[in-house]
Amino acid sequence: MLGAWTPEQVRAAEQRLFARVPEASVMRRAAWGVATETARLLRERTGGTAGRRVALLVGAGNNGGDALWAGAFLRRRGIGVTAVLLTPDKAHAAGLDGLRRAGGRAVPAAGANRDTSGIGAEATDAVERADVVVDGIVGLSATGGLRPTAAELVRRVDVPIVAVDMPSGVDPVTGAVDGDAVRAELTVTFGGLKPCHVLGAGAVRSGAVEVVDIGLDDELPDPELHLLEAEDVGAGWPVPGPDDDKYSTGVVGVAAGSATYPGAAMLATGAAVHATAGMVRYAGPAADAVRGRWPETVATGSVGDAGRVQAWAVGPGIGTGSSGRDVLRYVLESGRPVCADADSITLLAGDEALWDARDPDAALVLTPHAGEFARLAGAPPGADRVAAAREAAARFGVYLLLKGNTTVIAAPDGRALVNDARHAWPATAGSGDVLTGLIGALLATGADPLLACGQAAHVHSSAAEIAAHGPKSDGSRAAAGAPIGASALLAAVPTAIRTVRDAVPELD
Picture 1 (tube, rainbow, N blue to C red):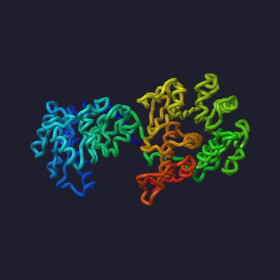
Picture 2 (cartoon, rainbow, N blue to C red; picture 1 turned 180 degrees about the vertical axis):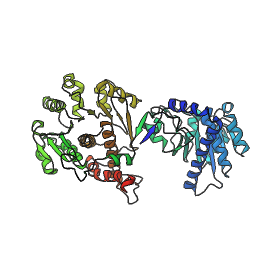
Picture 3 (tube, helix red, strand yellow; picture 1 turned 135 degrees about the vertical axis):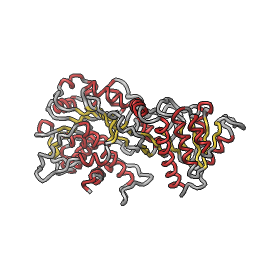
């Protein structure tokens, strides 16, 4: 399982490291990592490093120092390096001296022969002739978008950008972008991932992220956020053993859809079936349609007739009238873990009495999108989606899965997971119904609700990507995909589960 640490956690860890290792040595170790990854990118993009050029966009402080020292190491490999100094009088002195001694050049961003935007001719030449640009403009302490000169230089870049620690202009904590920001092809960060690498627009603008070991491992506390990798999901995904039967591998109840609109019932039930639940019991007015599509399902007309279940998935398509309210109340009173989505969230947001019906000892998972979250919490999640999800989870005593391109999952005790899909294929009607069925099936196995949500979110986004691109023989994905519907996403769930199972080393 991966972790992400806040800038405050990283800075505190660095100070503890500097007490026993000179700061200059740590900086050069970080810069060596940037240089190594930049040279690798050059070889991949151009076939080699000989005769190639790198431009450094250098701001004040240690982030700029990392870029300058990286430039010195690149210059010693025979690569032409020019540093464009945004604030020449505040450039990292030792790093600048190291670059010049290695044979690199430094020019001011606003030098002689400026154009109408204020950029000097030498700075323009350095950026336009570069094969790769290194972003060392600002570091983890910065907030807000790029200043005008930096923004103008970045706009002139049409080659890959390597960001030092994080793309400049991205909020380091929330991943939000408020103004101009760098879009990196590669980000080289130090010690561990930061929230901006996995949240929101920051995840997209970070590109591929490489973590360089600078000796922080023993100094870092528990991470602020956790991320499940494919092998984590695969290792924890329930599969029947030799002593299992249909009851021991999880019996999930699905209450969704209507006779007029059976689609939600079909999608949520199908997801529970594909998730390897031992038994799926559908309860609702779409029973005939569900039985015809999923004959392995035990389908009844009402939740009262469903029989014994170990968890419920409820909400998609049940409506927000009295019948939907009665269904939700019955499920909440059952004493079983519940995943409540869609209409269930709207009902809970508008009827405090439904909260009183809930069994306090049974886990409740809510899966709102931003609009549903606003109805539930009284305000939109805002830029800091992790903080918003944590606050709502604690306030309502629930496990809250906040949907989005980056899915945030928070537990009542403050634990948080994120699933960074890095694509938007699930943004289609009905895809949330599939997610509800997956979570319900995992809850029925007795899984930790936080992990169940994380596993389901990972498989859900993977299935969407497979549906859009189709799996390739080498396991990679095509660069572009075709638009998909929720039915295609659902059909790809078994392949997505096999993919995460195949990622577990001992299962190879």
